[in-house]
Length: 95
Image (cartoon, rainbow, N blue to C red; front, side):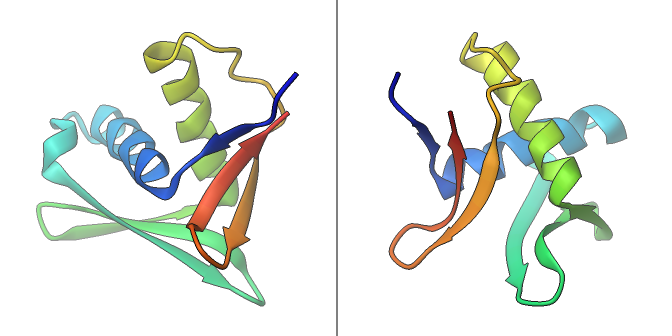
């Protein structure tokens, strides 16, 4: 089976949907910035109406699982891992 590669924009879209559901707003109202730090790993900042929420790696994986299940009709438990790629930026890889 081929590896699934989820590009940065799809990770952002998944987080927008995830945060929108938690905050009861439309996904279009959510802005997301992905980040990587050598000490802390992957994280994201989500902004809804000028309020910031920080998501840790596990929240990001949870958002991707929701997106895989509901938007791609794929198994959400395929062993996702976030990767910092020199060319593509932050991507997710699944088995």
